[in-house]
Length: 98
Image (tube, rainbow, N blue to C red; front, side, top):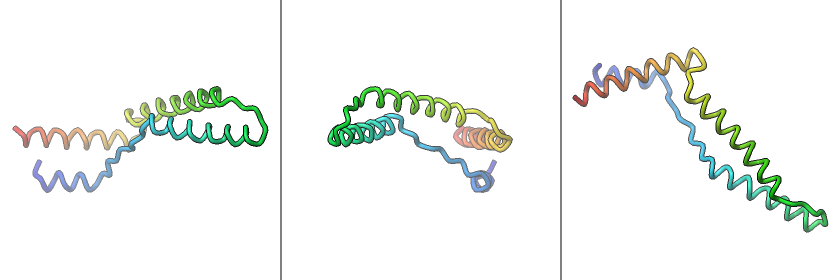
């Protein structure tokens, strides 16, 4: 495969990766929950933050697991086509390197 063919293939398929940082999401969720609990405490409601943080972390974990599975599987026909293209691009790059 020539360089121009590789560029054409890359232009045809938009291969994007989502950058989900679980630790950032967990930190943000913890911050929001702790702030909400503090507001409740100031208003006179006795609320413990720990169970809410644990619940939010559990939900985020499940979401992260499902998302990682979804992104790493060729679930849709379009994903299967993109995988074939990606394999061809990698093979072309490997052949060019040799």
